[in-house]
Image 1 (cartoon, rainbow, N blue to C red):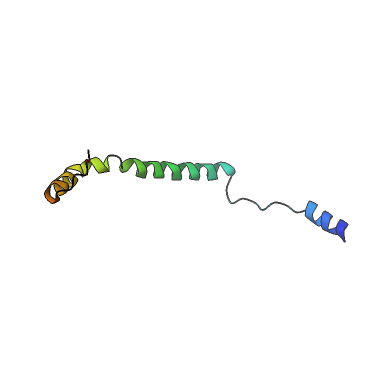
Image 2: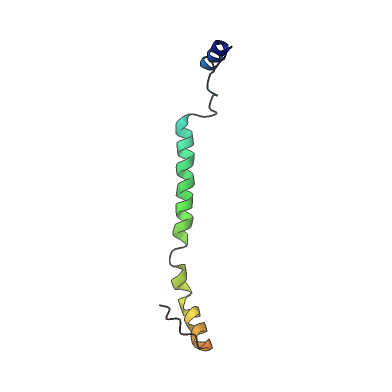
Length: 67
């Protein structure tokens, strides 16, 4: 029984891929580039709204010390 199981495991082929391995690497790289672009697009967002926060803090007497 054990020898039959070992022979069956030894003759098992791996599942074929739907694409060559470099295609998967290319897809992963493209996803990371898109995510990097999204992250980059949020740069300096807090500074764009700093004047609104400062005006709100001054009007309500909050001295948050924001820059």
